[in-house]
Length: 407
Ligand code: HEM
Image (cartoon, rainbow, N blue to C red; front, side, top):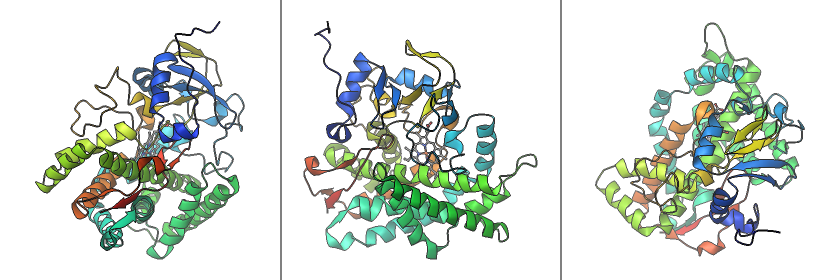
């Protein structure tokens, strides 16, 4: 007989779950911290929700990122899984291939290069805000959070200005259709792949100071990226850095508007020219309602134990970052937004060898984006009741479809 003292497990991946997954995560952490469940695609996978288990699993080399280790390769349900070539990128491979590619890209995508990019990100941000500042209202997702990261990554990669709007449309298709018809995603992935391959080929004969040229130049003891590897690398930079940053700006602005005391505190500190609270605040926004709900797929290469549960070889393991980052065993008052939070080692950027390569760029866009919004639109507030907002309920990312504001 079922133990009546343990409540029913919550329904995962429902509309309510997409709107607010945190009660379900609290239930899982408490009653079933390593939980086998059927995903909407029909695939069975383990969800790891406690902070300590999550951190350990992210660093465990027996958990592979390579889908060939799935018990039924080809049936993981990952969109684009079959896009040959393009998917051989950092997020789908293990050492030693991962070590080699990550070392090469790290030579081109350095924190210094990102820092040099500051004035351009500020210019892009100002231009976007100019587009709606006089109107008194806007949709922060479509007019701000969506275009900023895509233009930023285009500029970094060295996509010529005249091609950037096409690129924006393809990338938009890629996420608008995420979870929808596969055909739309596959078509836009194909367009992006074709475009990037041609651009890389062209740049090989005409190197500049952009990131693609840097990737072509990068070498390590005589080792270089092949053109196919460079294409897959640009693709991962684009898709890993796009929807994530939209959600950082969108979820971040939303959380601030829902927490007026914190918002007021941040505005006061920005007005005093102090960016300390903004810096800790971005980390707290990543912890509190981060862009990535679940770190990408991992597969058990051998039978192993996580959080006391036996996981057979071949099973997929999903580390639920958003649940781990609200674990009361690690964070004091985890459901409270505290922009000045200390000791905030959140897992929003992952952990271990796959730790987010783009974190410096994400931080730059987050800081410039939120600072500019709050200083230029000091009366920023939600224009609708929160219950009217729709969340994009993907399995990996968490973000708003639209964010109507007035100011
Ligand atoms: C990896 C989060 C922005 C590029 C990751 C991972 C997370 C993450 C959680 C690890 C996934 C795993 O272990 O399965 C985020 C968040 C962002 C952000 C929250 C924004 C706030 C960016 C940007 C770029 C980027 C702007 C680049 C332009 C990458 C790449 C990887 C990665 C290339 C794979 C690294 C590897 O496997 O070695 N990111 N990311 N990310 N991210 Fe980000």
